[in-house]
Image (cartoon, rainbow, N blue to C red; front, side, top):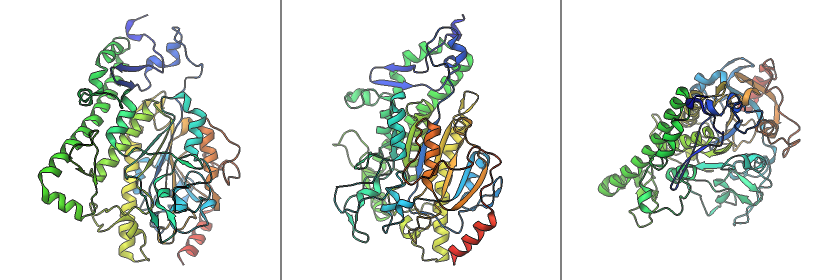
Length: 486
């Protein structure tokens, strides 16, 4: 056997002092290599991953739904960023979360987006979502197969206090993942700490000297030894992967350095940032360092999604969630052309055409960030397909129209092929108020955590794997849409 084709285990990682770097799927890990005596499962197809991407405040309801149905559909204005992934997405119309029909405001809807339940009304810390979320149910079933059972990411810190307009604690608005009905799962919003969680085995105890060393420097000796064991194609894959890890690490380091310099040395910039609603935060491990300006929102989102990508790519976890913002987030999106206000403010558009247009721009920006993640997933070969082929990416919001706090006909996209068990490239229209949890039953089955029912589900969602399934007639949807607008 050639030294350059030596088989290795799928669980191989690169190790160094304080670092442990997972690897993508290499040819030396495939069943062909098992013939040389490496232990492994008979079925070594790439695992199915599940990511749930949430944005708050709903969408412009008039510009979300595509025209047409089945394979004969035209993407709506908001969904235009998905045009390059048209054949890799399912747009699902008329799914609703029945458990959120009761209760006013955002918190009832958002906190229960992945649970399908009705949250307990409280103004205190006695939170109760009414159920476990699908990501955490999956993590309990298959989380032992990966270093991290699940990964929860976001960009906004936990909000506290009471929203007196609706009588709910704001804590609900910071969580979509629930490991038990009373236990929300904390999200990581700091890119450096999220990166360290993936790649540093002793992130909580290493010394200051190790803080500044790249994880790739720490595992360099192990990486060199691995390159000597694998063939040319695997060396190429390994080098490309390590370059992507270094790129993320470099961006994190640059942002931290750039923030410190600008925030410390330019008082006028600091005043301008604060006047625009920018918050002060500390992304440093050292609480004694100067407090820093918050990261540029677009770069913050891009970094967190890149970290999520690395986690799925290396099979560090198969379950991930990401929150673009908390409930009632009034993130100022004036960095976008045509937008001059905060997200929540503009979601209460009162049917003002100018506000609706700005509202649409914000949601379209969110779709572009999701499309970029899909771009990256499609670029990564895995087995006989790509990482995107072996994944399910749920993209959605817990409201349709933020102005009406409407929980019906939720904006929902499912991307990927889930290892060949989804047939994308369609707009599927279901009956009014079809349970969103039917989709969750179908997703749990595909990720390896099957359940007969989940919350208000009535069974799996019909037609996801059937390329001939067309859904309900488009004309019926149009009639309903006209009634909604009237």
